[in-house]
Length: 393
Image (tube, rainbow, N blue to C red; front, side):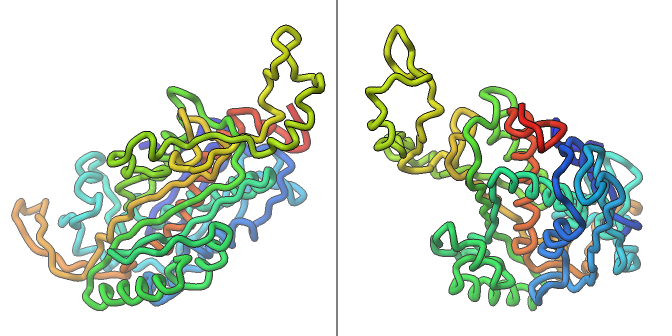
């Protein structure tokens, strides 16, 4: 079973829904990053259950304990271990499901593959294990913040209710003011009412979550294997309940022409370049008298249908990803399944405490997944010194 992601900045996740604890070990974080438990706790608070009427009623404080990797308030270059102890699990709710796999869950496939499967709360396959994602993501976000890279997530759609386009600078502010975490206040209210409607029915509803990374340097990613968009897609698909990933225009490119979606380039600082055009600079090629170093140009694109990535490499524009999140499969309505012990068809009614919509809580997890990939690629591409933040290459 693979529980580690990342090449240099790596996250190893451990724990299960009803086990003693859940956590993560983060390796490859350079020394001298200021970090304490509060940095991680604020991210876990966004993911934890029981925050509103539209989330599960499971009451967990999800208090983080850092047990290694920090010295005098800063990372010391050694593995950072963070742990959260489970306190409100009710395992008896799952005893009746021991031999009857829940539709929409991994119960059957996990049991078929491993044999010894912890069915309590979904065990290792539970959405609760994303605590490990968020612990790693919180550290990645703190590291990226040193380079002015900011990552924000918001709910774009619940069911058929879609949010209107909101100014990118206002997304974080607006989304934090409602339990759905939607940046369109009018749509957020309608989304909340829809979620509560399905909750009352004993059902659930899915949606779309968008994550945006701002101020990402040009040059992250590799052109063939190790494409930045490929790694982002893999990380986002690695979140439970995610069934689709889009980057930029995503599936809309299939119904578009190149003339409609090609992002055309322009020079942002053209005025400053013109002023020095007739002056010999250190970038000038002595033979051709043409500039051969792009570092003096600030290149942009007039549109961003590519979602900030071209040829597998970041181009300096905002990186925009969207995930399709399926409805929570644990619902209280009667469903058909099989009894694996008796070898017969049967019906089940799932008890326990479950989210009628996962989207609001998955925003923190999506941010974390993107942050982990970007931090790893920043180290791979040499933008961050691998051992000490105070050093340059």
